[in-house]
Image (cartoon, rainbow over the protein chains, first blue to last red):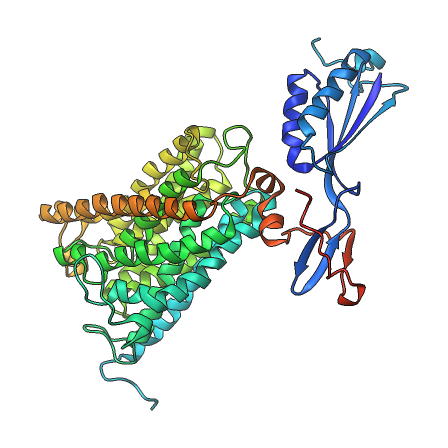
Length: 117
Length: 431
């Protein structure tokens, strides 16, 4: 079991969700985050005040998957979120100690496997 | 007693001053309405297209547009006698009781609003620069010409086609131009693939409400006096949209079992548009019927259009083109001499009036569509009309204007001239 955490461009979020769906990866949490990688700052101007937007908008996805799904998930993420420019984001894969489905009390593998599989 | 040109009526002038301001407010109101209908990342750009209309359409109107619309000229287009507002003074125009200058200003606000309306077809993808070029040229080549046809002594007006407040130039003109613009500019990148939802329904409702409020000046002012036609049109502007709302609620209930807020806002617009051409010509009773009738074709198009590949994004064709066409034709059936002192429709014994209305309903869409199509094709040859895929994905607010509607300010670093950061400016987002 792994927890896959991906930080991607917000404008790519829909493509990513679509790709995950196609890869039959279900069960995703998504949040909007602000962060900074290596990309250039964006400059904005408000009534003559010029500011450098040091943090850029990103989307963070958290996906808990069983072992056979780790590689397909990473592949789907990489393909759908890539533009080739700096700022495409990162994927972190973390070992997952336990997982419990609240409704049924199923644990671990059963909990991260979609219902009806 | 302040100076007053001969033939000017103070009451009429007072009302028209207010009406002009009311109509001008409709353009930012439309901006709010449109901004709520797009995704959050395109809020400012969408609003700014309406603000751009306030800028370029006004300037073009004063330079040449007014002359082409309201100078005598020929049946198709006005002449050059009022170019740069030459001869537009305090003295009223023929058969008018308000200063010519005020008449020009009132008509200018119509031109501005109509240009802003067309933007609804191309939001979320058209570049701001080319849009401004388009707006400037469109306001003269399409709006001024159609205004001449219907109000400025052009061929439709000569024949006796009735259009009280702009069903021809404003509503049909914008609606069918919007269809052409959507076809030339093309669909949004994600159109038909992802749900592209309105990001703020409250803006949409407030925008629609303010538009209705402004519409009292739009229709009520189109009698150019405080006389009966103005009062009739003013009151009909209350009655018609209310009936459209009721029917729209019913259609929503039939179709989805829920009355929707975006639907209600749209219904207000459709009702106001429907009564625009007919306001001063039909009885309050028929105005209410018109409100109910106008809901149906516009509703049908709003339901069916998204199933096509035509990304006429904010449904200007349905809400303005088709509702305006309904109103224009409705005059032909139910105009009543008893109420308007001008003409009867088919229902009251004059079939000829319906023919004249049908003529406008055929000629206007064709002219608006063809000229807009060609105009955008030509501009497209000189400069790309659309933002590239990356810019469209990031959002037009940041890429076109370098601002965000909902900036958090977190992580923003102030650039002062002393810091020297001004010297080498990082580009907006890496490309």
